[in-house]
Length: 448
Ligand SMILES: Cc1cc2nc3c(=O)[nH]c(=O)nc-3n(C[C@H](O)[C@H](O)[C@H](O)COP(=O)(O)OP(=O)(O)OC[C@H]3O[C@@H](n4cnc5c(N)ncnc54)[C@H](O)[C@@H]3O)c2cc1C
Image (tube, rainbow, N blue to C red; front, side):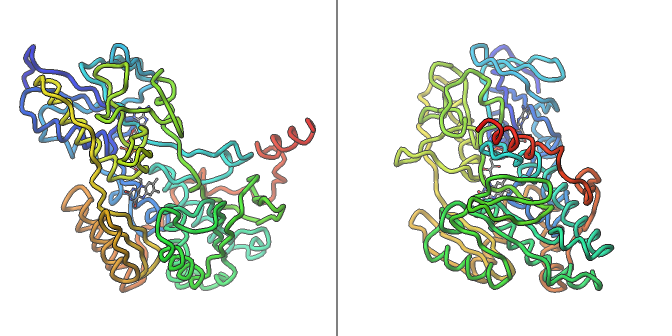
């Protein structure tokens, strides 16, 4: 595109739902703006389906999409593969790890979330979070490695090789538990003839008293019933207090031996949200005004998971793909209004409801602002339909649909690739004395 002196430059950090949504909306503005979209990955990630990648149901191509390909026909979007190290909101500029500077008339911070380990000793070093494509691939390799190692040496089951511990029973933890239980009952049972699959245990440890806290009581009960039917052990009102390479310690002092702890217990804003000198609140998220700008920093917007966006009741909206996408599109409209000298409008979130997958033929959905409740096969079909519709290209929609049909009718999983050797290598015979949790716990004990 040919930029004129009137063309404004919008700099966006993050090509997730929020940043990409903003860029694509701005792309429709004709020649009024040019956009530079910076992301540390050359792909957009579809986090809601990560648990299906981790449980070998979908492949990498189904949950990540080339940013250049998505934007290739948008002549006013320039993609830059770079990691932003520093944000200067006063000058609306960023400095990257690759030692480059970018400056815009507008700066949009949409850098998403990272895992929050709440300083639990060992959680950072010894758990598998599920917030990036790499996380999901590493977890898949660890799960497959555990089955392979135990198949070769069944005695490893005594060391907890077939125990999977999921920390947190929100949508991420619950979907992961259901996906893992399904995988154990279908593919693993069919493909590992010598493995004592019945010894496999999936645990969910949750500090609160229910699964799927944002959902209704009926959904809590339904999810508990389905997961328990599928053999998942629920440890509610219980917290993980230490994570070691070979076991976790719970609040009551009990121990679960395991080599696979999956972290779904909390989120906080991406690091650059905290180092930018912008006002932050809960979870280190950037405080935004109703129009998604940041007070005191003209031309700066914060969106999606890395922003605290107030809902109609004044409480922060949840970290959801729908909130991120809608906030991205809304910010684009406000930027265009600003350029035209028109007033910016306060963000209004259109709440279409929430849903979570629990297992084969089992999901919960609460539809619309009035939260019409559905569960079972109808909610399951709705979940598949909604997620299919959200996928980026027709090719990916078709491929994903085929993978789901294949899995549903033939009970055969997609790619079972053990391709991350760092996550697959397990030190079965080490004593764990060099791990960070042991050191931190020893230091805390010595200080008493
Ligand atoms: C496992 C899981 C399941 C989920 N399931 C659902 C669901 O079913 N329904 C739902 O609505 N929501 C779900 N969510 C939440 C939803 O995915 C998020 O709310 C949404 O992705 C947030 O979008 P975002 O654009 O704010 O951030 P993200 O999608 O995280 O995008 C942030 C982008 O910023 C980039 N970035 C970060 N830091 C830098 C940097 N320093 N330099 C350059 N680039 C950077 C990242 O690479 C990333 O591409 C789920 C989330 C997870 C993790």
